[in-house]
Image 1: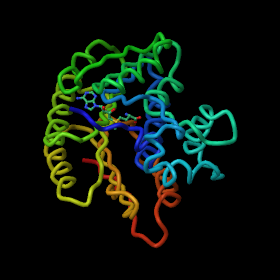
Image 2: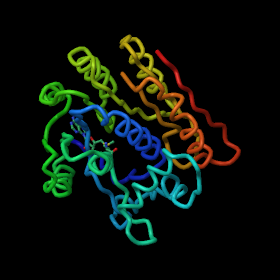
Image 3: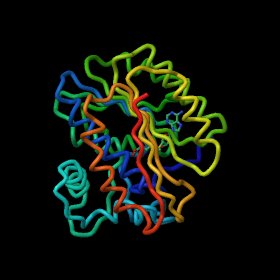
Image 4: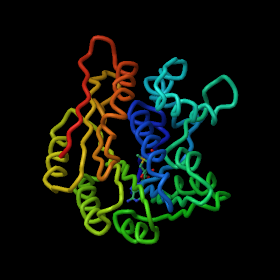
Length: 275
Ligand SMILES: C[S@@+](CC[C@H](N)C(=O)[O-])C[C@H]1O[C@@H](n2cnc3c(N)ncnc32)[C@H](O)[C@@H]1O
């Protein structure tokens, strides 16, 4: 049974890094049409600070809240922050948009969106949030079984987000198999795979196994924050078939985010590795 609810973590530091990269990818990739965004682990799409989930640990206070009043010249960060502000009409921050909302805001009329979610209640929330968007196909499905079928129904430029909750015992292995299978069948699609950086050997076992897949055109971004407020000590990504200049184009944004989000006097780092 699934118990993870993304609302507990909505807008935390990992969401901020992930969604900034997502904004970058959608903006770059949607230029080529037809474009589709496939969110295999969708969540609810919208999270509210008035909800008991977000209130529980208030992880957003060490994430998006630290950024809302930042003044910067960096275009990508401003794009991300402007987008967050479109969901918050009044001065006070209340709504944090998940990956589905970010994608639906940034994509064009003819673009297609596919959101898959397995948790019963979370799927109902997702359905409620997107039932009026004609571009969106919603599926209550187990993505470990259905992702390739979903990808096969779209043509052209496809961006696939693999953002699981890693709550099952063998979920790291499942993610490896899922990614390998999808990349083998659809080698031209673009993939963004998220993983948490934990203070245990799990993270190294996962990243080593992922690297061993030897997928072509893959970049790893590994970010360490060493924070004291969460078990998660950082956040990481594998990107397959990302735009050519990505590392150069996002590194200043990621470094700036890290400076704002890290705790003072704690070691932190960002590593880009082309595999
Ligand atoms: C990390 S959250 C997604 C967050 C979202 N992508 C975002 O950035 O806003 C992972 C979601 O995957 C869902 N999930 C877990 N196992 C799944 C599966 N096998 N198939 C589809 N969804 C699943 C969970 O219920 C949870 O809502």
